[in-house]
Length: 260
Length: 98
Image 1 (cartoon, rainbow over the protein chains, first blue to last red):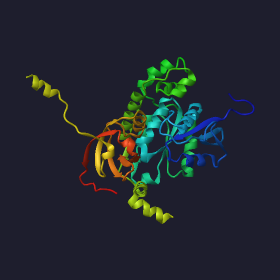
Image 2 (image 1 turned 180 degrees about the vertical axis):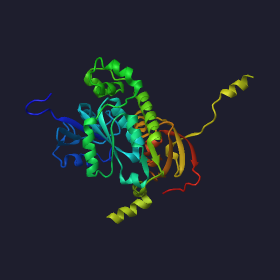
Image 3 (image 1 turned 90 degrees about the horizontal axis):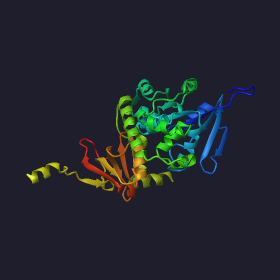
């Protein structure tokens, strides 16, 4: 693969739910924004940067890979073509965020999971059994707190260990069947899940199993969370309470007036 | 005898209501979501059929805010109307939150 002018850069995709700290990880990895552009034909902004052999792309935050909206379609296409996926996960919302993580595993992507221990997570006393999570997912898991320099060094050092983890074994048969016609396993999964756009692109009929696959994925997420999450307190943190006060007319209007 | 057999297979009466009638402080179990896209999103969030949710607050003429675990989301009235739930007990020891 290498030539005298240097090897092709490895495309590294940052993926995660909205507001999990992807951009903070991006900035810490690249140091600075290198290139900002719109994804062709959309208003979705893309940020690219370079770090050593890696070309890093930040994707719009999504709850899953499919075609529900423009952000999802952009994130989907970048994830499909990426060599490595760095999946950023907020530990406060692990039961929500792991749904995307398991989907990426089912896609067979080479990946690393970054657990973002946000301030909110510490305040709520959420603890994760990181070693067990790594075992269950089958990919390296790195914990970061407020994206400190040392954490980023840990992440950089683990990138070469990015690998395909434990996908849902129940999907194997369907995927193997499709992969006789589709070379990419990630595309095969989306066809199996009934993604109309990807199916149309490949000239195939979209699958009809989305509900079943999603339901099973949700069940597996819940099983994993039950095993790795240790929480000391349940309930809403200050941020959630504040947003609730702002929503309610009785408290929200005075707050609005106060701000103005 | 016929009547007996018939009675035994009858499902227990469970009152379902739609989420838009939820009041602050009540807890529910989701039993159905009559919207294909919303059902997919609910599966992603972990608030699909079978999930236990808690009504955190209900904005007058606005959305219903529900919590499941540590997650809170606001659900618009039109969608809340299509989410069927059972239960409605006010949890003992939990104060009404505003």
